[in-house]
Image 1: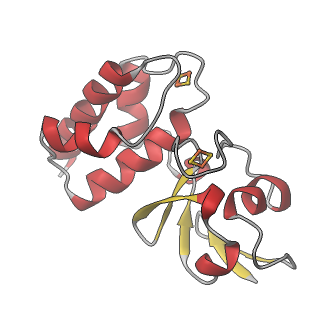
Image 2: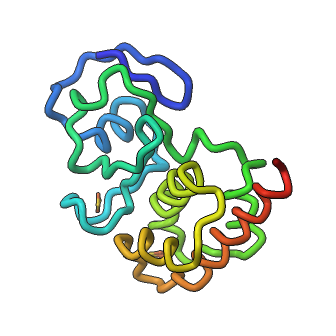
Length: 151
Ligand code: FES
Ligand code: FES
């Protein structure tokens, strides 16, 4: 398989039904994408594929062969989303946050100025045991504002 992850092309031999999550973590050693439920429910494993947020725990790697895959490692520290996350000190334990950031990245790519309601609706499909939901909402609004400033 040829996987394009964070702009780098990897040629790997792997079971084509293996979930993308485990290919990223075990075969490519990209450990930023997290395992939560393994059933597509919690959102911890979210990555961006061709601009869309995808739950990598239920995505067989064959489904993303040749597509553009972006993981948390591929978003620069200077990106408005990461800056907003740091400025607002969003994480508590931090475990779920890569998935949240990737979902937020896909959302802001689709719509750089989402309404509060749209953010809440999209992020309602993600679970955080530490209850960081209010800070996530504020951080996405902040990132949107920063993106506006940088246009
Ligand atoms: S680990 Fe993939 S959705 Fe929970
Ligand atoms: S920050 Fe701990 S689970 Fe979300």
